[in-house]
Image (cartoon, rainbow, N blue to C red; front, side, top):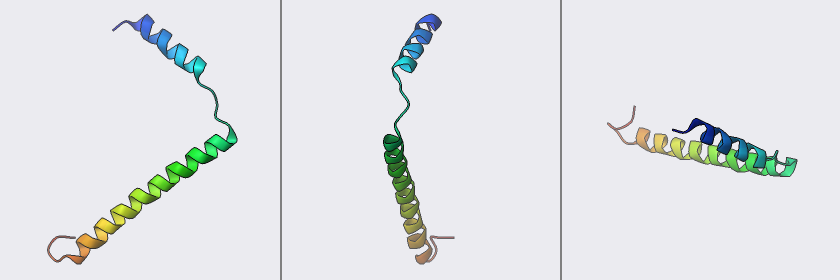
Length: 58
């Protein structure tokens, strides 16, 4: 592990990175929120199906 090389590569990436605009941030937030809701809905459906089957659910 070459620490100076790693630090230089991290610094280079940080210099290239920029703060997202408000529109970019809102778009990413909407997509992330939709993904969280979708995963939660899928989990709820699995729970509901498993609770309907006798002897499988809690």
